[in-house]
Every structure is written in structure tokens, then in C-alpha cells.
Figure 1: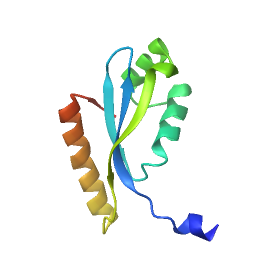
Figure 2: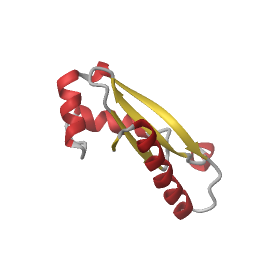
Figure 3: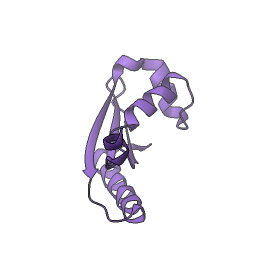
Figure 4: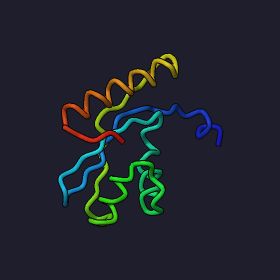
Length: 102
């Protein structure tokens, strides 16, 4: 239990891809290891804030979607620095992949 509480969250940038439509969404999260579970939950329940992502999910089905970690940020000194760096990295990956924002 103590080890779980003391583990360090690693932020990162991720992509959600739809194989059927070829669309890609890129986002960032302060704990990259937990975001896919959260995303899939909100998509399955239709509560994700990106309506175009929910529409694609409903139109093509969960089996057409994949999750990929694009980059991890470890050893950031402060949460402010980490958040700023994550935003910059996500913008870079969105441009590189011609992706939609998450």
C-alpha cells in the first residue's frame, strides 16, 4: 500500500486513432498510465467532451479504436513545468500527425 501511494505519476502525450476513418486525436495527461481507462469509460458512456470523437466511436465501434503513448515526461521538477511541457509536446504531436485536439 505504501509503495502504491509513493509511486510517481509520469505525464505524457497520447494518441487515439480510429482505423475505420483514419482520424487521430492527440492529448496529454499528468498520469499517462491511467488515461486510456478514463477515455474508454467516457466514450462507452457518451460523456467525453469531444462530441466528434463520441460520434466516431458510435459510428465505427470500439474495436476500430486504438490507444498509443507517444511520449512520456519523467523527472519534471514542478507540476507547473510539467503541465506547460505537456501542452507544448501535445501541440507538437498534433501538428506532426495532423491530429485533432483531445
